Image (cartoon, rainbow, N blue to C red):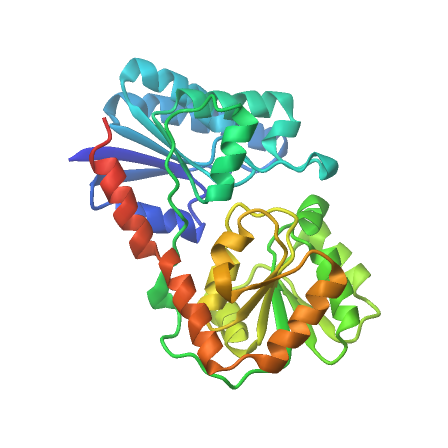
Length: 339
């Protein structure tokens, strides 16, 4: 039986899903990678890295969600302890938008930690084809063996039946708390598109901090847009809104996957997105995609006017391929033969 140490943001649903799947392969222990900011955050980071390193001699597989400051020393020490290192790539580690200061690549020390982790790991698991392209581009192909394994959603948490009683409602979910996240997630565009579609209600779900303040300021004079501040419950708030909405919007400049898009599709929403990152992968043939505000506004109007129960069921069916069950099966297959 393998001894697996999972390091990542433990409150995240995608990390919990992987922990459940890896439990079939052996004994799983966890360390939370969320340490906060400032001096206290730096101290917690150092303590966390020490905890990981001290556990390596009794660990068969170190499984890290994202490469970052905290993964580089454990990955290097793992070579001495002969611990295999698996890194899931699909966030800030492979994101790169220098024009807004987003991505590990724009910070030299952080990028050295990320790049070195990717090089010395046993295996890297990008969460999408786009994330894998980013991985190869940013590291110039100098990375450990890699295998794309899509993120997975727990399908049993979502309704089995799709209703067609929908409001003239378009939703986007963005739980970011910074101006950089506000821009990356396309909230300025969402607000402007709302201005162009006065007959449809628009809702932003989940922003906090500076992102929330900016969203409130930018949408102050637009009567058909409202904001539900974070933190919000998936079951108590988000899913009921998905069941009412006609359209789910994701206007991100860049996305390495798009979990909220899949969740909305499982509830029968029609996705209207940009072509940013992996969004074309997760919406496939059932999604509408545009590159300008006017295109996106027209697509939202079309989706509201023309979609039926059949198209909503098609949206759900496409999203089912990104299930936690599928991810677990692929992880089991890969991890069971990991040498």
